Image (cartoon, rainbow, N blue to C red; front, side, top):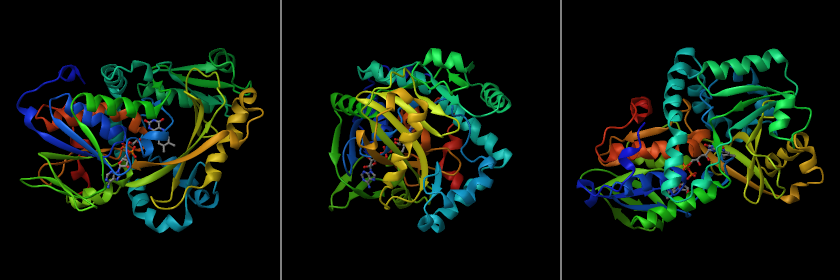
Length: 427
Ligand SMILES: Cc1cc2nc3c(=O)[nH]c(=O)nc-3n(C[C@H](O)[C@H](O)[C@H](O)COP(=O)(O)OP(=O)(O)OC[C@H]3O[C@@H](n4cnc5c(N)ncnc54)[C@H](O)[C@@H]3O)c2cc1C
């Protein structure tokens, strides 16, 4: 995908347009900047402020190696165990089971070979330019250092060589840039790792950020520099038609030429107000932000332990776990705390004396569709556009989907085929 047409501001016919973006997470802010660079007057509305949702506390991994849809038939035999283990890496809160069921039924349908292949192609199309788009966007914001391109590691401790070789081949055959390292080679790259690591996959063309929050702040500053604004407000309804408007819960009615919905996991009722019933649910995820510096130069994920460690400004972030429990249930602090023993095992010297009290617990809401694809494009309600559902990859895809929405909303031809992401796939 070329980003050339976004390199300069383009005050043209679009210059007179006004767009309201709902949601100041990384997806909404990146989209707002893409529109503002095209000369559009953009107002971002958020009920809490900049980076109040998942974009604050994610693992900071630009994970373009994740080319496989999450609906994997290998998960099926594990589903019953998920209910039973409150600290397992993948859990459904029992009280939420009946509400998650429709989503899970669609998830299972997406496990078929045909659907997995189709969804995988659409995931790859977004991944393809994600690093370049992020690099370009952060350079435009004057913060290129917020993208570190040292790749990432997926480490193995107990798996047989056969399993490891098969994993390597799966990624390589899917076109992912990956090297298979033995334990010594992995330790040479990351000396603070335990000697119990027997092998690693080194994804060489991915990256990470030392601060997901700083990316959102940089985007917000850039938007304001381009003449946009950010306001506090809780949108309760999107009204399309000849004069699109966003209705706020305080009674305000904000008018614009176009509205763009980027409210992450909260997007479902707002999409419904624009005429679409979408199967959006949230995969709640946790982090424990430790004050210890790890010395790691890149994110390290564990194949067996199912979590990721990312070196960040101000410490080391331990992140992961999936919990189905909706938007209202309180966080389960134990799910954040249980990440520390795993980090102690992988980085024994770094965390030898650490306790959970050295860390800050956080939970965020991944916005996930059962086919692992975001919803991107125009709604059936005139003037209302949709950009949400970025699942585990919202940081990775923000710059790319922002460009696509910028192109679509200003009449340019989007750089990739947009049909796979259309909300119409749920009609
Ligand atoms: C533990 C964890 C680790 C992750 N790690 C990674 C990773 O390493 N790499 C990666 O690419 N992705 C990762 N993700 C996923 C990524 O964080 C999300 O996909 C991404 O942040 C979604 O961005 P968003 O802007 O769509 O949503 P959010 O960041 O959630 O923003 C939505 C915004 O909308 C606002 N809003 C909601 N309702 C309304 C309303 N009615 N009116 C006004 N405003 C409203 C909210 O206040 C919020 O600010 C991770 C997620 C979690 C939870």
